[in-house]
Length: 127
Image 1: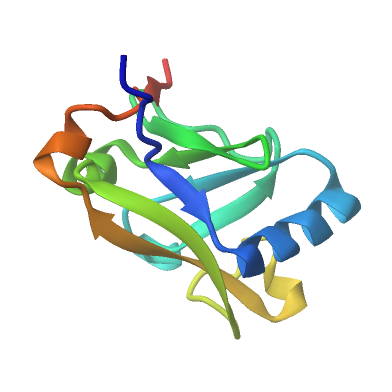
Image 2: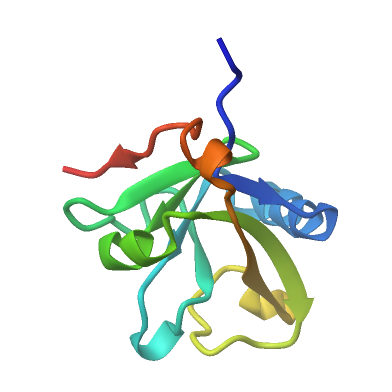
């Protein structure tokens, strides 16, 4: 049986920021909304600081922290691998825990091949 393909990864720069946030806040979670004031930038919260809506998708974990995506945005991006990265500067929302560090999480996307898409890890849906 083939090993399942992950929908999510993180760059070393993103992992460094995550470790810094873990040291300060403890358990974290990520949520990527579908627009409005935060755009489509992933937001980092203390675990339990944001509640996914019904049928939002948890596509994986980074350093053990859940990464949730808005249900409508997931339908649009379900054929893509998400790589969490970080850049210098302030993003559009300002609600995310990395904002006081002068950083912004962002996602880079890569489309799965048809073969990869058939062998992806399943998503968890909120109820």
